[in-house]
Figure (tube, helix red, strand yellow):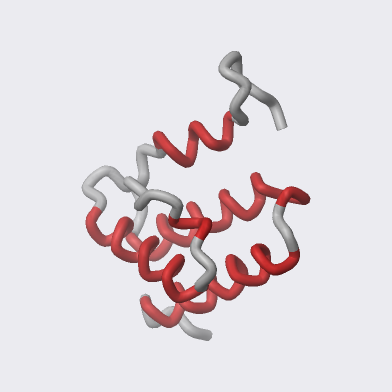
Length: 96
């Protein structure tokens, strides 16, 4: 991952300043998939700046975080975040 002049990864800046959602602090650090999904849903539903529907915006932000974290995620953390996808689908009633 490319680093900016300040030494932080560019993806951290995207997550912090995303024009799609105003994320709650430390949303991706929660130890609960339910809490991650509920927080993303609150942020997506409340956002007036997003360009897509709430579900798509929330899922995109979650996928972005998982993809950018890459090998830096522990197996436990990745499992929580992957499970949060299922929880998010249930919250938005997008189950297959």
